[in-house]
Image 1 (cartoon, rainbow, N blue to C red):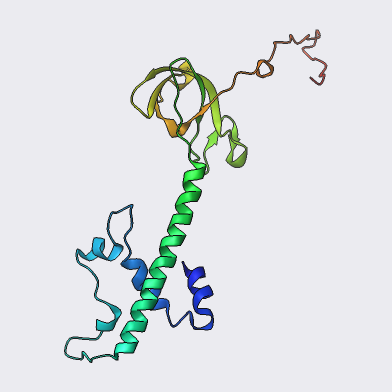
Image 2: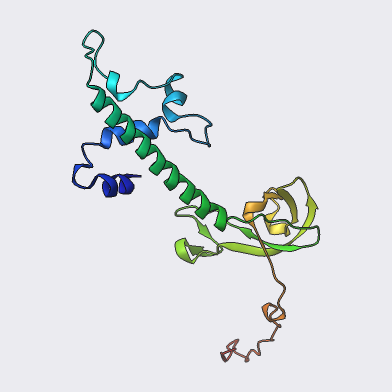
Length: 192
């Protein structure tokens, strides 16, 4: 929004900053289903023309009022375009996930700063663990997983946003290779 204001008003953008703030605070937001000013104060905001103190009200020139209203209208249009663009970006990246009982999924770990997980801390800690089988669908966006005994203290129902589909791949299965120990319990390392 600020970028579009600077591009539109060029060198005088800082003069119009109050109008941009006014347009933003009085624009309808779909997330709260009202304007932010109305949500805060439970009433509509006065126009910038009436910002004077009570008793100091002076009648502005009609041309000045018309110019201000046109600028507010233009700023609201730019704001709507910016909001629609951001919404389209978010909609393109979001996808509805749906699983069936018997699917295998990875479970996303929530990042906790400074917590060591699976012997690794920070960036090196795994993002997903698993795969685990879905045993039951609880609702339209919740699933119950068959967790191993070491995760028995974790609740086994997860939101779909915490799951990622596992594509079975035979190369993921590692074969057990016995280690041949010498009499002094040493062994020779060989690359796999």
